[in-house]
Length: 284
Ligand SMILES: Nc1nc(=O)c2c([nH]1)NC[C@@H]1CN(c3ccc(C(=O)N[C@@H](CCC(=O)O)C(=O)O)cc3)C=[N+]21
Image (spheres, rainbow, N blue to C red):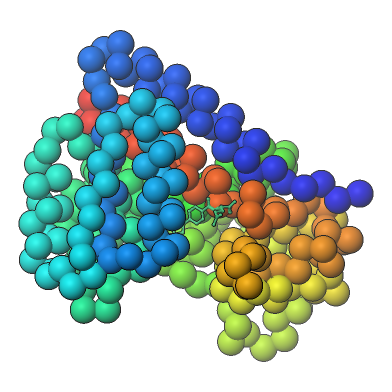
């Protein structure tokens, strides 16, 4: 019997915890603040930034949406980031990706104060994760959200064979680090991999972040495996993942749906990490 991983349920629980932490901070006169910087009018980005803002508002956080037109200059974006870096009411800065092509994404991400880098994309935070450093630092919200889902449904990750399809710096690479830091055995593959089925069939946990709708079928999945679908593809106005859900649920032990799986965890983790950054700013 397949178990469907309920991302909304786990996200709701995390959001309650986060809201309680916000309330505790407020009692001390501290209000966690997040700024989301949105450049241009890509419909998906507009939708996601609105969802992020609404969730932050529901938690009673200070939440700002800073919008720029598509043709904003690099210097204007950098100046805004500088301003928020210095603004004590702002604990978390998120620049919604992808950016318009004329902008230098690396320079923009590197301009964010690492202590306000709520996405964990700044190279100093990426380096800490890579090196499995102890201490407090933010990491990719989608990756951390996937770890929260896995911990909610599986007893342990140590010794598990994990295959990740995809190599993105936003999800797959940070997730690889988080998993190997917990003693899982992680294999990174991609659409360039020869005989990809060999790797998918070996996986106790299969994470699919390839950006290809319905890429994975049941013949490629080990019976009883946990399948995490990171894909978000729009087809005829419907949202589908990278996994053929109806097919793969026949063999999987646990599987995330799209929508309602990883997506809600990304936003809940963003809120969690905004409060983390706020608390950390008080201690170091
Ligand atoms: N700097 C930055 N940080 C991000 O974290 C970031 C980003 N840029 N750019 C875009 C991606 C994508 N992303 C999602 C967040 C929530 C859902 C989500 O909640 N999805 C719902 C469905 C929403 C719908 O109806 O479309 C679900 O899967 O159930 C999906 C995708 C964050 N991203």
